[in-house]
Length: 103
Image 1: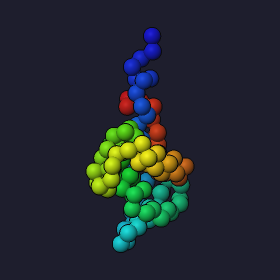
Image 2: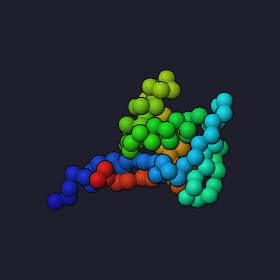
Image 3: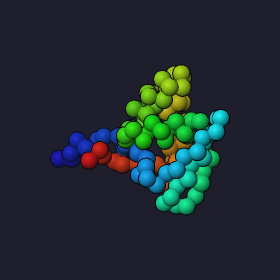
Image 4: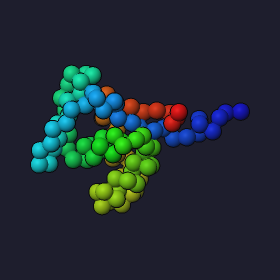
């Protein structure tokens, strides 16, 4: 019988904090990733996603609820789709990782 962990939605987490160096300007942030040697310019929403995930791993549903409150926007399917696309971009940059279980 499959374990209940296989039914859990995936969790998203930020790469180790010691690999990231932040610089903030008025609306944007730059993020230097020591692991890849790349610097990325992030707009406010991706920055907020990374900062939120730095506090601990979350599912897309959990992240959506938290950020809907912060951004004062409805927690809708469109909002979750938008966050999912940004998470995909952040994973491609190796800033965020996806885990299939919390263990």
